[in-house]
Length: 207
Image 1 (cartoon, rainbow, N blue to C red):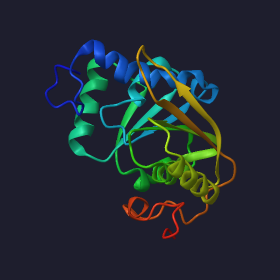
Image 2 (image 1 turned 30 degrees about the horizontal axis):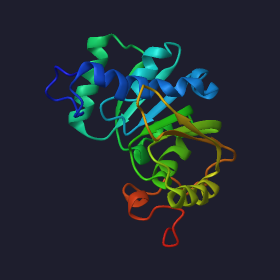
Image 3 (image 1 turned 180 degrees about the horizontal axis):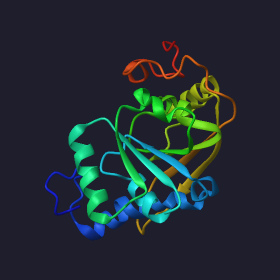
Image 4 (image 1 turned 90 degrees about the vertical axis):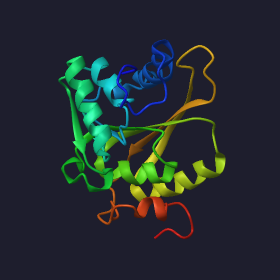
């Protein structure tokens, strides 16, 4: 990856990338729902983390790398081919517009994608009933977590865990936020593309 000038990441040193991307991505393997998943969607996949790393670690799972930007999709295709990752598939779509993925996934993962209420709205329709969302976060922001919990209640999700992880030596403020799909997401979701970011759920102005 560090030799690809089009790689959508600022981390070019191989050793640092192992920590910042690979180790951080694999920290989710300690969550039973992730290690047992057979259908995983990585939304806003970008450079392929955590989705590509999980695909390699979980050869029995099918991992969909959902990414809307063409250049990033082309990069992901090259990486999958070069690394021989046969259980990962690049999906060139916005999460809100990926109709094929509705109610299909055991696990949805997201890393550095958007504020948490937005991630919840993207993920909830894609999860099977009983499925799990894992959202990678840095330092905790109580106000955002409160808004996310309100959004979760609307979307049929509930927070089941908030894990502080230390994926590599010196890592600080790394957290995995885990949500379960407790009831079916209302049919009005997903809202049309772009609305979740403009009017995040959990805020008084959202509707």
